[in-house]
Image 1 (cartoon, rainbow, N blue to C red):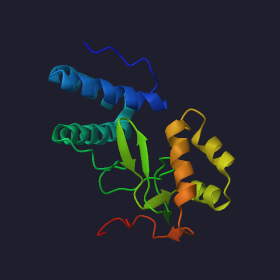
Image 2: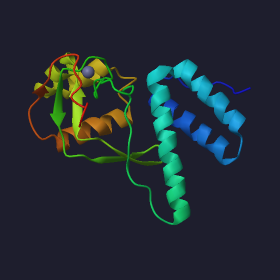
Image 3: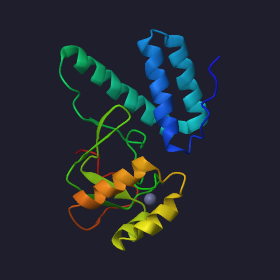
Length: 179
Ligand SMILES: [Zn+2]
């Protein structure tokens, strides 16, 4: 039986620990243990974290395959949003109303290099905070537990790579569709 990870899913290291353990189990050929860990992750972390775990694991598979070929992994996109939907890239809230264009940048962590994508979506609250450049307010809104090292690096990257003002779109539409 898989023991619980001794971490709260709201803590940043939870995802990293889950992914590392699944990856280690697979590398050791223990698919049963990997499946148990993933089932546990889905039950405890919910759909959003489970999706991130799946994407990070797929990225690690690519990294391992690249290593075997003697090359390095291509940077890999991950997104917490379920397929075909959008969430706020700052607070992970639903119903973003604007996006900001950014020059895509890479972040290292979770065993690979992850791409930011070229748009940051924002919910109404985060849009207000971004437009006011109220980064302390953003930290308070996201919450100190969620505002971990990864979030800090993502927001720092956004500030350095942002390319302009908020672009509004019709609520309920998906500007990613057909891109
Ligand atoms: Zn938000």
